[in-house]
Image (cartoon, rainbow, N blue to C red; front, side, top):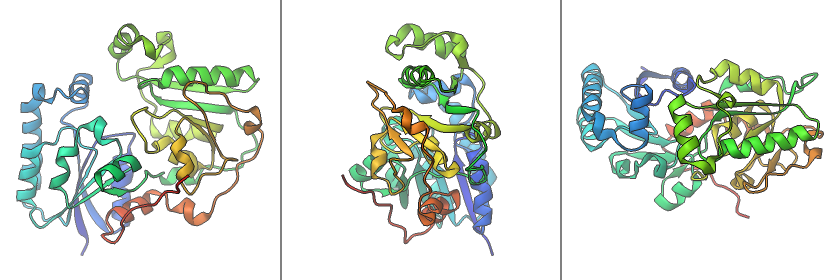
Length: 337
């Protein structure tokens, strides 16, 4: 008999679909619900700036529907990823309705960004992608994962249309640093491709005029419609090197870093913490400063060096989920330098 999982997490680049499919592969049945009551621009903004009280009735109504839909289902696990709208009342009700279930929390954002430290006591098992949060809060450290399509990318194509690509949400100083890096790379006679995403034009104008340090350029530099997962995978496959600019408040590795590993692509990153990971190889990974993001042109001409297969496989989605649901798994260890 299959175990059954109640999975609550954000809709994010189809990761929820990949996770549900992999849960099935591991022998679980999964019922998925979006963690947010809606994905409109206004709803996301109010949640992100911690103004949930303005939509508290909407959140309450939404979770009451989830509780009603799952009331008579016996779950072995309640699995929650990076919550933004969950609160004490909702979690108390969830635990009351599922008092024999094991509650698991995984954070793929920092606790500081999500303001969710207060939720930790509700869970039997808590894991995070951020080693700093792991150390400070004494919870299990587990980095992010790559999905199966990245494993299928040709690691030795005949040619690369792009020497470097960058894609992702233009948060914090990412646009400023990315633009500078790509200009520098282009000046070396190399080919680059950039995709800067913002969820709404209003966000562009607010940041351009009220946060000048972000140094936003022309509105034409931005897209207000995200790439879909197939487009992202295609872009990675066409690129020799992936550029990753992490959020300054995050210590853990981004999904972009792990997906570059899965695709066996070289990586340029602002996150110096990557040196502590067992897959780090200076032939494959180049660390740049946020203040002076210079890259040695030689990095683009040397080949990718394959890493140990066991290490490579340990960052797959299958391995990630296996570790999350394995009570014996006590967390990854990083190298200390």
